[in-house]
Length: 125
Image (cartoon, rainbow, N blue to C red; front, top):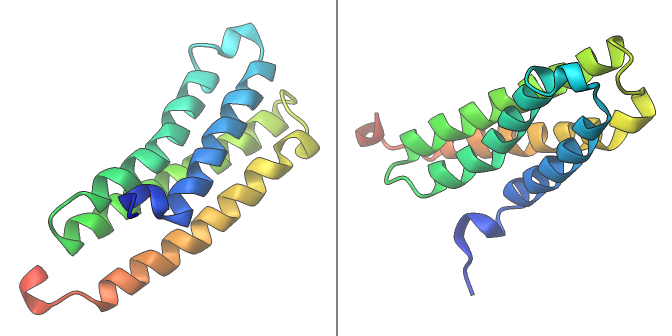
């Protein structure tokens, strides 16, 4: 049975990253509830959301655009993790699994974007 975007490994891994980030933001100080932790939750939710939305679009060009947005959100969450470490809200060890998932997601998204770009027809532009 085809589950659409839910069958995509990159969507599944990005959902795992959502779980990881939601667990990590619990360690942030209370003064970060409406700042960094809120921004991190929005950024991480954006990754699987854009993958799913792009998958459901009617053109490869739109799909690539949404995958690119997901890739940008992945970079955003990675940066926010580094901020958390620099501010000593989290340790490198606490963020290790999230960093690993970020790297995996980046590789898959890059490969998927390149694959889709190579399949574009002149009429897709």
